[in-house]
Amino acid sequence: MNKTPVAAALLFLTAGLLSAVELPESVAMTCGDIKIRLDARKRWNINRIEWKGQLVCIDTRGAHYGMTCRPAGSPHFIGSGHTESGAGEEVISIKLFADGKEVVPGTEPITGKSVGMEKVSSIYKFKVKYSFTIADNVLAERTEITSPDEAVPLRQLYCFMHPWSTRFTDYHVVSADGKKSGGKFVTDGKHRNRAFAPLICWYDAKSAIIVSTAAEKPSWSSNLQRLLWDIRSYRKDYICLVMNGVFPANTTAVCRARTAFARQKDPGKWVADAEALGEKLQSGFAAQLHE
Image 1 (cartoon, rainbow, N blue to C red):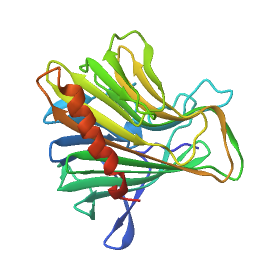
Image 2 (cartoon, rainbow, N blue to C red; image 1 turned 60 degrees about the vertical axis):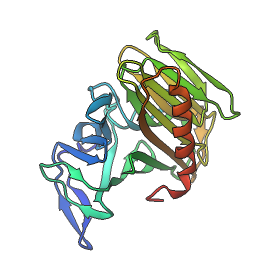
Image 3 (cartoon, rainbow, N blue to C red; image 1 turned 90 degrees about the vertical axis):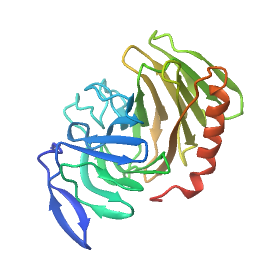
């Protein structure tokens, strides 16, 4: 039976001892210019991102972050906030950090020079370890997905779902072979990108905000893609590890992504700034925490 995260007791390692702690409905975490929120109804995935006090990644009921999969033959996704099938992500344990020390959340936001989370979940047939760290104004994420002792046929498996706000007017993509493309969002329900791309960037002409997300090629994938979905609700970015394929038995896939923000008032210069930011993000994969 799937457990709701609010009712379940979640495990924290505090002062070297395991203790059962009930999480509040929402947990806010702030580091530098980045503020995020974790929500019970989304299985403690990130459910909101702000930069310098401005909402950049939305927090509506139908906008999901994290990892989700769609079993072969099923019309429903499982994981993150998806519960349409009657199942969902079952959170096994969570640890929250501030400045390298484990903390128990209260009513005030968790703050520090670095903040982060480590979470272990069961999603469909997979064991999933997800972690993030925010430090030096970079959001660094890692997902480790391990299959059982049987192959798992899937229609799709996504991770690092980021429902960026419709405030973003422009996008820029740097593909795996170095080719560049981009343009304007038009909100037509189509994908602006499908092939795997190590770097995708967004720009809001009104506020001059730039977002760059660098993604490392996963350690395992089947029909790897990176989708950028341009719909009325959001400009959604997500890594597709499996598209109409089979996740082999006893296999672990490790995925990493890094996101940062900047501001450029000159629309003619934002792409160059976004690429420079992306280069820094990509060079930082070796130093990503919680490996």
